[in-house]
Length: 187
Image (cartoon, rainbow, N blue to C red; front, side, top):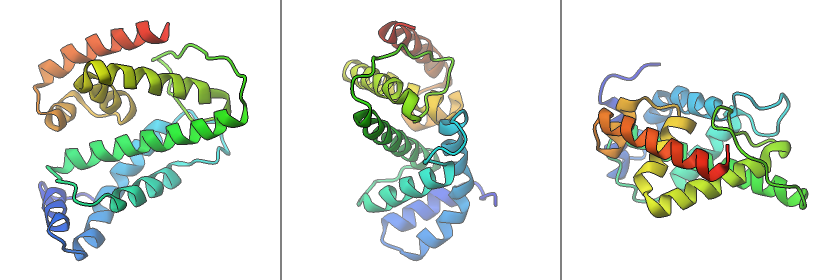
């Protein structure tokens, strides 16, 4: 189902104003895109992993509906918040998995690979999360940009709209943030 331009934003505004019926109309409009984001996160996960795209979408949506008083700006803002929640869910999953396997060494993470929440890669996810948190302390926008481009698969234009910057700035910041992250992770 494809939404008319502005329809998602309009429904988000209605939802913010307390219209409970807006949520029922919003779900079918955003589900496909949320599933695409989840699949991007999980695309190279081993078959049979306990966390599948549908489960990740549902968990993220439950957390989204638990967050009260989000000042939704637009459709892109909704998907950016959703992508952030999915990342947090995967990090939580990796932490739980890593806690079961204490004593594993930390491995270098390649940005050319998808970072996935399998038990074998839990330490990689945690290392990437730690690196992104360090980057956020230094430059929050660049950390958010990495999250949106790498994890959510957003285009430069989409990231620019979410962050309120030009596509050219997104390109420049992407190169800088990616280089910093590669150095930090020792890739």
